Each structure stands twice: as C-alpha cells, then as structure tokens.
Image (cartoon, rainbow, N blue to C red; front, top):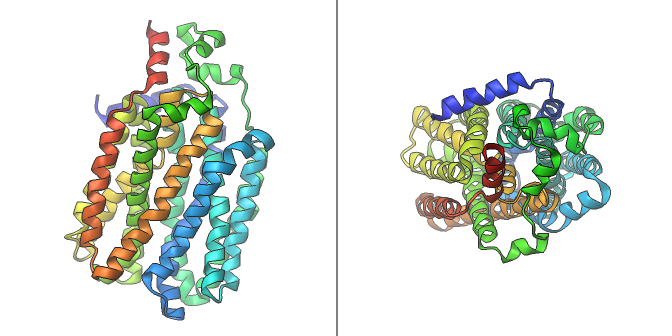
Length: 429
C-alpha cells in the first residue's frame, strides 16, 4: 500500500470518528503549536542582524540556539517528566508558555553577548516543555492513530513556519530585530495560554477505548492493559533497543536542526539569494512540511520504525540537494525536500515511544527521547558553524552529516515495535 493510500485510509478513520473528543484536543494543540512553537522558528533571522550590529562571528551568533537547546535537553532529560507526574501536564504546559513568551519579549533588552544567550536560555526552558507537553497531551488521547493525530497537531508549527518568517522579515527593516522578535510573544500570552487552560489533559480509560480498538473488535479495557509490557521504567536503560533509539534520535536532530539553523545564512551567503527570496524559499520548507506531517504520521502508524528510518534517509537526500544549489530554483528543490524530511521527523517520537514500549511509561519516556532530540539539536548547528568558520565552506560539514543520517536509519531499522505488534496480535488473534 502506498503512502497516499495509507493517508486516504487514515482520513476515512478521521471522518468516521470526528465526534471523538481527542480531535478537539488535536485542534487546540494545532493552534498552540502555531503560536508557541512556530514563532521561535524564526530564530535564524536574528543571526545576520546581531552579527552586523555587534560584529559577532557566525559561531557566536548561532550559539544562542545551542544554549537554548542545551537548556531544553536538560529540562527534557531530568526535569519535565518528574514535573508532569508531580504537578500535572496542564500546569507544566502553561508555565512553559509563560517562560517562552517572556524570553521572546526579552529580546528588547539584548545589548551584549551574555544577555543574548540569556534570552536563549529562557526560550529553551519554555519551548522544550511546550513541545513535550503537547505531544504528551495528544498521545494520551490516541493509540491506533497516534502518528496521524500528532502530525495534524504539529502542522500548526508548520503554518507558523510559513507565516512568521515572512512577517518577521518585513518587521525587522521597519521596527528593528528587537521589537520584531518581542512581538512574537503576544500570540502566546493572548491565545495559547487560554487554550491550554481549557484543554482536558487526563482522559479516562473509557474515553480512549473507542479510538484504541475498533468497535467491532470487542476488546475490553482489561484485555488492552494485558498487552502492556511488564517492566519498570529503570529497566529501559538496560535494553539495547532504547539506546539505539536514543542515539538515532540524537543524530537525526543534530542534522535536521543544523540544516534548519543554517538555511538562511546558506541561502543568502552561499547560494546568493536576497533576504526576502531566502525567506520565501525557507517558507516552502514549512509549506511542504505541512503535508509531510500528515503523510509521515500515517506512514509511521502503518510501518512503524522502518518508516521513521526511511524518513532519516530523506534528510540525507536534502543534504545532497543542498550542495549544487545555485539560484532560486535549485534552492526551492533543496528546501522542499528538507521540508518533507523535517515534517516527518518532528512527529516520530510519540510513535516510536508508544509502538515500542506502550503507554505505561509515556510521561517519563517521551520527555527523555525529546531530551536526546534536543541534545542533538544543540550540538548540530554549532558544530556545522564551527566547521564553516574553519574551512570557509559547508562541504566538509554536509558530508559528515550525510553519513550521520545513514547511521540513524540503520539503528532504527534494527528496533522492533514490540507493543504495536502485541496490540495487533490482540486485535487480529
């Protein structure tokens, strides 16, 4: 079955179950992703501005993303999971959005390198918890369609990626980069936080059972619990599959975010596009990413980790297409394939976590995988920037990162979706 037919099948499921309350949660998550995650995606637009104003190097300018990501990784690995279990998902989500919005508004006060990095710390503290909390929120309501539901929700971030770069590129020449980035906090304060407060974060077993199994399957909640894997959270760290997933997640994120954070600089300085044309080409990444999230989510639901492995190879393809880019047309080819790859790889973690280990440890496991993702995101851009500063070209860095995508794909290919297979055996056995 092709990805298109899988997608059409999933749309049929969505239409047949549109009254399921989980889809309302997806709609709210969509809007929050648009405002709270889409806005900070414009970060690459600040790099040329601070380099010009303060005389910083590319490495110094992009280190804000590294510090933001390191902060997010620490939050995800050690703090968010325990906080969700102690304070509740909604409290963590709302607090995170407040921190992120304050961080964006604080661009108004940046006058030095340390204050610039402090802004990154504040945004990273909030943004990491926002994306993890939203993925957890959606995954709590879905079992069979966790990939599709997550994909639909995260499309909101892609819409933000299309809208906010164009808005920011127009605001900066008129109001300056400080005011332009501070304005991005308004939607979080005025819309995202009220929506999060109204969301139902703790569905009951009876709430999710209609989606978890087909109505005709006659499966009770007790039988559904019986297929869960019987081991404690600490036992995960003794399993080879966990470390394969963690390493693949880290490598994939390093490459993905390196390409993302360097796209504007690469398109303007290496390909030769103007800032407006570069913004337009970069927006195509998010436009393609919208459709990619639907297709990838449905594909991951069907093919599980092998589908995720294939999507890592698409990321490598984007690198290959970046090298010969000269002019707008070839730049659009590169950004389109990058959008296809990135669109799928931002919806994979709930699928991987749930297909391999089931729902029992999602509150701790999903933040942990997000932590490895954020750790890779922290390392990737600055390593590519350092390579560029030393060599004056992206060739060496792109070659290295191409190899990393292959390694990530091979690691994921070797992991079995144990819980997904047990659930399928229950439904069809």
